[in-house]
Length: 140
Image (cartoon, rainbow, N blue to C red):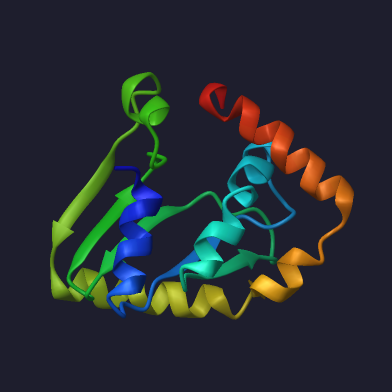
């Protein structure tokens, strides 16, 4: 099971699943397009997606139930785990969870929400780039 399936299952159970991802200011545009290729699938599942607009965002953090937290450099993919020697700090701590939750909510002020309706109206060139980047995604 891939990580996005876990997110979709959580949303189906009524969990408020929100994803804040890189916006147009990113150092690897191909990775952004590859990720956007999955937006419609996630949006249809009830996951809320936001793209950060205030500059480059490279954070990888996750908070579940305000208690379980993960922060680090690791992407949620096999390449990051297997080849890139990246790691995350994982904690079961309500104080850390509350802090990360507040940082997340503050960052949402600088993000653009992506809705299914607006995403479906994106330009054709974006769709082509997303498909192409998805083909390369195992290499990214």
